[in-house]
Image 1 (cartoon, rainbow, N blue to C red):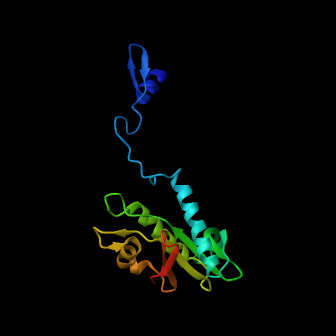
Image 2: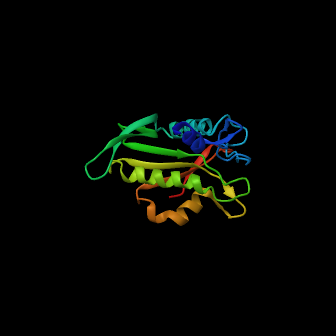
Image 3: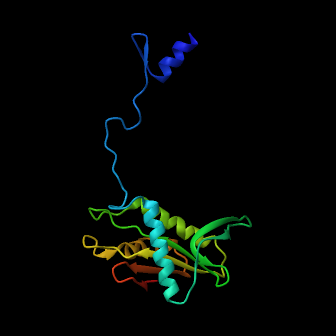
Length: 178
């Protein structure tokens, strides 16, 4: 019957009872990629954006959070909220507080969001100053910061007018590295 066929597709019939299929990843342990000691990665990101905003304010540059700017290609556009920016000063900032993994491996999934930010800059108005503001995180294993690693391997994806800034949380300072 139709009902029996549906039950067979959704699970197995045992003694007249339908046993649902095992959930995805049943019996496996999922890795937790949340930053140690944080409520959530979203909280970490927002806190880092606030640090970036404070850093730029100390430099005399007042930036708003979540600044909507029309971006697009080939005559099509849509608003994108940049992490920080100023319409009057024509500046947009994307912030990333990513780190090497605990075992100092490359956080490859995080690097894709850096590529995405480079595309947003590519599609943004040409007359805006573009700043990529990242956490300075050094790897002894790789003997470089995460930003230096990204710049070395992905220079072909980065517009000449995109500035890279590394923020040192301990010193509360930032340095332009590109």
